[in-house]
Image (cartoon, rainbow, N blue to C red):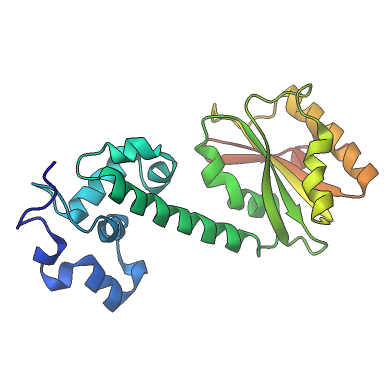
Length: 232
């Protein structure tokens, strides 16, 4: 595969248009996603400079989130990428993801919307159902977010005690349960209500308050507590 050409290197762009120089002068926030990717890619391929290559990757994978979630092998297989560039891209995206996780753990939760903002973007894109718990201290500050189950969930499969292991280990005062519906419809099922009822009762016994159970789907969320489902 021919990766470099005299006309498709970043250094062949006008200096004012080069992503690295623009980042140094204006800061990373001034760059587009394609320009930031171009810095990782360094060079383009015949017919595309690095910025155009970055734009093609974003379009193919449906944006940064899609690129982050795409299998490593699929990123490698894209024309002009290969193993080394795919590794650089994946490493950069994972660093950003970990920074976001650290930031989340300093947030305080005051409403279902606050809780949903921590996980809604990522969980809306999941192809499988997943159940997580957001662990909180006595001031409703986030101690951590842990994935408890993955796959099709129903009330007979979920072992309620598993949800509280992390809460007990981290001395959490409260937790919020969150799971997604890959169908995109956040309407709670009867099993969702039954699971919620069992979790709330277990929390009372363990002295860990269950503040809410959110269902996420299609970029939306629904609070079972606000609907009075499972919290009676």
